[in-house]
Image (tube, rainbow, N blue to C red; front, side, top):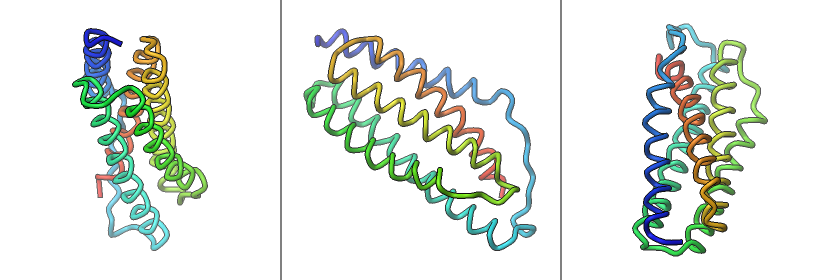
Length: 164
């Protein structure tokens, strides 16, 4: 894969990232739940949520670092594939724990948005890995789309989660 293709792919993803971020602001409902009004199980769920969102941010940041190093030709496509696969495996473990958790009724929306954000983050990483493997630009477009959707759900969840 030549440098021009790598730069094109990175530009597509970066443009998509900014579009996804601005689109995520539409349709977000305001949620003003006070932390003082939460039960112990609700507080426990909120702590769990904060933990998994920290993991999400770390996984997203690492996948971005791998992409950046690949575009700069600091790592090969094989190294990028292996690094992305590793972070995908770690993210899958976190996503599985989110899916197995039963949230309190008050946090059903937060849980739904968290689950969707993780699902799309996994789609993003799979598409990046396929791009590194094949060089097919279809996968870079797919990665961008999954990234945008993941960020939209992350921002919706953050709106709820960070209102405390």
